[in-house]
Figure 1 (cartoon, helix red, strand yellow):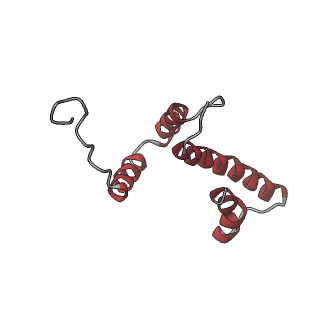
Figure 2 (cartoon, rainbow, N blue to C red):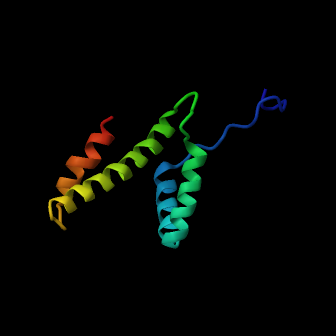
Figure 3 (cartoon, one colour):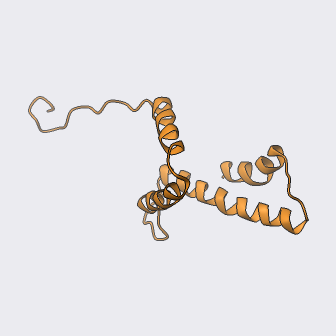
Length: 102
């Protein structure tokens, strides 16, 4: 059916590791303020409050947002305790791992 033009040709499989490296490098080169603006636009393209169905990819985006929200709560709690420093382990245990394991 592909030869007859009924079905499109097979799509090349995405090299996820290469894609990740390239995207991280490109994003790292962005101006911080522009990155914030365009990241918010990109998130809006992926998720919304009223999604009829939530894909695995969308759950990943939502987890990213949840990590951001919980990071802010974590930092405010530190401030309330009069702390300015924390360990990476403390941050990972209190913020990252609970969300990644959802």
